[in-house]
Image 1 (cartoon, rainbow, N blue to C red):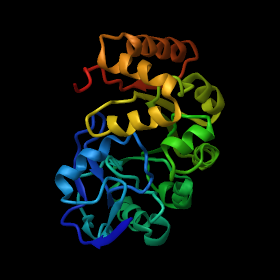
Image 2: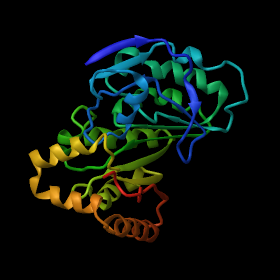
Image 3: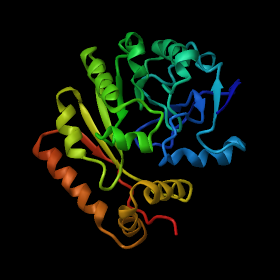
Length: 272
C-alpha cells in the first residue's frame, strides 16, 4: 500500500449523485479492498500507477479548505464520501473527519455520511451538532465468510450494525444502504429484519458491472464460487429480467412493512 500525504486545492465539490448537491472526499483511493468497487474509474483522473486499492492519498489540509462563513451550503446536501471511505483505517491516525465536521458545523448543511466502518461512532459528538444529518453504513451481506472474500479490509458485519445502533441511540437519523446487492449472496430481507428497529431508511442498489470491476468479480467467482459464474454472466450479459423482479419484490415488501426506502437500481446493459 502506497500512502502519501497531499495538499488538495478544494474539498467541497459539485455532486453527480442523484440526491446530493455537493460531496466531500477526504482521501484519494481506499484501503477496504472491495472486489466490486465501482470507484476504480477514478484512476483515470488520479495518475496513479498502482492498482486500485494499493494506494491512498491523504488530503491533510482538508478541513482548512472549508470556508468559515458562507450561506452557500446552508440547507444544501453534502455527502461524505462518494468515491472513497472517510472512515477507512488511516482515519484512525489522521482524524481528518474530526476537522472537517468541526468546520462544517457553523455552515449547517444537510449532511449525509456513508461508510463501511464502525469508526464513525467516534464522531457522534460532532454529528449531534448538525440540525440535519443522516449517517449509516453500506451492508450487503450477513455472512461474515463471504464478507471477508469480497470486502477483506472493511469492518465486520456486526460492528457495522452496532455502529448504526449507536448512531440511532444518539438521536441521529440512520440508514442502511444495501449495496451492492450480490446475486445469491445478499439476503436483503434478512438485513431489513435484523436492523429495522433502529434504521430510519433503507436504500438499495444492485451490483453494477463495469469493465473496471468485472475481471475482479469474475476471478472471485471462478476461484470461490465457480457454480455461480454462469448465473452472473446470464444476469449481466443477456436479456435478463432478474433485477426487475428483485426490484419489484423489494418495493412490495417495504411498502407492506411501511418502511422508508429508496431503490437506486442500474438497469442499463453491462459492458460487452
